[in-house]
Amino acid sequence: MKDLEKYQKKLQRYMDKSRYQHTLGVMYTAASLAMAYQYDIDKAMLAGLLHDCAKNVPHEKKLELCKKYQVEVTDIERENPFLLHAKVGAIIARKKYHVKDEEILHAIAVHTTGAPNMNTLDMILFIADYIEPGRDKAKNLGQVRKMAYQNLEHTVEKILSDTLNYLNGKSGRIDPTTELTYQYYKNRRELANEH
Ligand code: DGI
Ligand code: FE
Ligand code: FE
Image 1 (tube, rainbow, N blue to C red):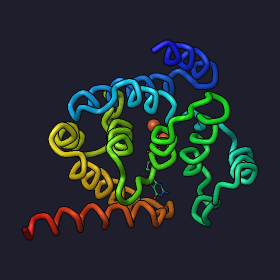
Image 2 (cartoon, helix red, strand yellow):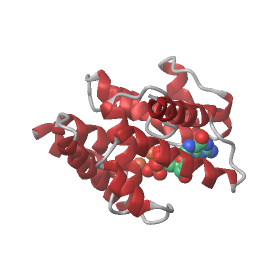
Image 3 (cartoon, protein in one colour):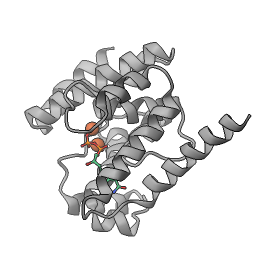
Image 4 (cartoon, protein in one colour):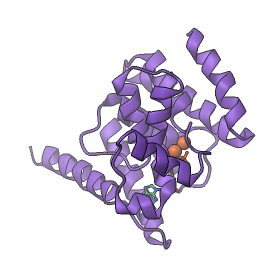
């Protein structure tokens, strides 16, 4: 895809080396998950490439952009503006990279907390961000990487459970969406097990 190369060059100018490496890792991991689940590979790669495009935008500027484009900012996002790089990433992908595909924009917008009832691309991006080869800090990474190629929903639930455990041991507030999303996927699995 020609756009992909163009976007890579542009992104590289805005990102430090390690963030760009992570971005490429997510892009190729998203491609590989798209292969496994017969999803559109080009779309998965574009979502992966752009998902953290707002990562280096200063907090003030992120709040400004949300106001300008009438994107709602929750109290938790105001307190932890790094959470906003997902929603603002979708704004920048639309305005600066001219991405028109709403599925790609949505996947970028929900990539940090997840959201209940995510679609296939949302889950591919959410998982790829967590398991890409450059990641090494989260626990159970080996198990999660294997799960990713067996069941997307179960993997999302596992990642959220591990993330909530990790955040509970830290002082940072937990976004209710993260909690809500975890409960949603846990309930779905339990309901399915009853039948
Ligand atoms: O942008 P990346 O670092 O590549 O990845 P990301 O957008 O998934 O952000 C990961 C971080 O977000 C990780 O340190 C856990 C944190 N996080 C996820 N959900 C929440 C959260 N942090 C807070 N405070 N609250 C949340 O609900
Ligand atoms: Fe991110
Ligand atoms: Fe990321």
